[in-house]
Image (cartoon, rainbow, N blue to C red; front, side):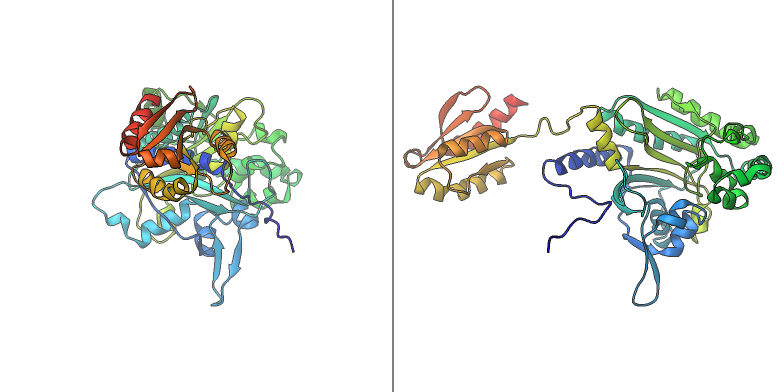
Length: 426
């Protein structure tokens, strides 16, 4: 029988996988510069971790998790996002006791959500994210946001917009919560069943409802910014001042509500503007989550982070016509003519590859014309032509595919020739 790929998943094949490697390499290099270290967590965890950490009133927990029971009767869930697992590891590995605080971590790996697949949104998707745990300094908020903005900038993405809000501390959120209940309760029967359930569980989540987003009560709902106490207001103003000093432009949106329950104080999203990207414009979301470490059994520890979809980033780059692989080329393609030359090829290829060069050759017994076409398709800078006669003389012909110039080079001088050629091309 013919097997088909599960709905909401994808094969990332050569020609596409290189783009992923470039994006992920850029993210890793930024983390190196910002001094974030990689963490790798299991792809599945105890279900209770996500129910408690992500929030049992969220759509993720209520509708989208891949949950199963193992042979020992334990309820396990494929991770739907990265933060809860990182925070669990922070507690499990006692990172809160490390001498250098805050602990700055990054992750990159597959996440799983059972939702309706659409452009840029898959059931298995790759999320890159960072988490900084152990400091409540607003300068750290600005650093985290700056790292995310730098990634999009360095990859060449244009029309990127940073949207900010403050969800306040516990006291501010409680005051806002009461105001939201009073605002929505008289007409809550006009809203969807999910919003009716959220009214007393977590009314802030009503503002994030996609079904009722156009209801008139949404636009007139109390703003969290009107309920920030002095401490929360000062914190938010300080974050904004740091961003301004870093030349990072932003827009304050009082209606911005992150889809996970653990956020407080700073919340942000990074969006892409312009035509051709579709209705879902958010590329990245994050914020501060003081209190989450305690919720998963650790000591009181502030934290902040973000998560972004690699798929959505690649989609945005493609929409804007940014080709990440435009400069991807082979250093050389080895064309052989004659039995002795073909026998010598594996040794020569191995030696050159050990020197750091990228090479390919023919394995299908094609004639010279077919081998030259293959070299052209694979964007080889040079073609190395080795025949039995050249081999006997200890030479090889080197052809520049861009200029057409060709010269004979001693085999024992080939490495120097390739290094020089690469230097000239760079």
